[in-house]
Figure 1 (cartoon, helix red, strand yellow):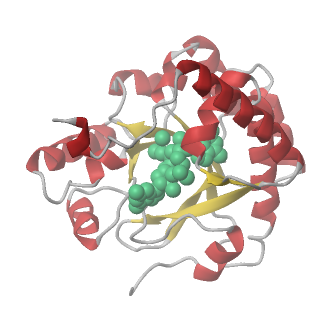
Figure 2: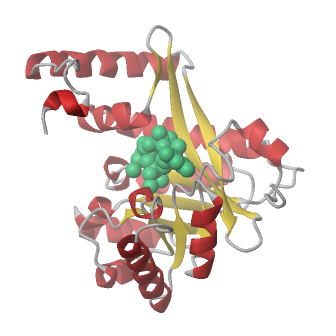
Length: 279
Ligand code: C2E
Ligand code: CA
Ligand code: CA
Ligand code: CA
């Protein structure tokens, strides 16, 4: 296929040098962003596939740059990770989530579990579990339930240390979810040692699970295998009712996606309440 046909002709390709300059610029801007309050967290509800009640919500970061506008996390998180500010940023995220959780008190969503994405960089930092523990005691509402969302690369690099960190944190209030399941070198056997509670099937498998037989077969197999091993399953990126029906039929447990709600600021999630029925 010619580049033109794929609509890539006009696309500007930065050189290596330009790219590293852009990265350095974003890195500097990101340090400022933390200081200048340009960052915020939004929350996307995760609902029970059958009852449509909110079981948890995922915290996702947003960055509104004063000149460049919104910069997506897929763009700046990797830069934060490679530049050494991910630990600082990760702490900012946990603190902000703690502040936002205070708003849940007295609402329908009081006590709901909140999921936070934890970068591999944070997870293998020696002080991570102590830091999280102190935030839970001092900043979060009492007995706040958290899910830490990690990817397989987190579990497989520096594995031994990660396992110990996980074990130190283990308690009924903290769960682990494996993010983007199906995209990496997935092995259910290795998941067993890591105390994963929930598996999140990547959006790329969900988007056509109601149309493409192979995708359906794969999603079905993942759900059955996960259940056999004692994990619950969340489907990411559910955008329409056909996908929801299919996932119900396949006995998926939890649903997350634009069909129910986009990620929203905490006040708006609270306004939407705890039930997404009768739409
Ligand atoms: P992720 O953890 O896999 O997050 C799910 C992404 O899918 C989010 O994109 C969410 O807005 C998007 N999404 C949810 N439902 C739908 C849907 O129905 N359709 C479509 N097309 N998309 C949907 P977002 O917020 O842009 O985040 C992208 C990635 O950036 C995240 O992927 C995660 O890897 C990273 N990220 C975001 N926030 C944080 C954070 O606070 N900490 C860390 N370490 N990483 C984060
Ligand atoms: Ca996630
Ligand atoms: Ca994901
Ligand atoms: Ca991702």
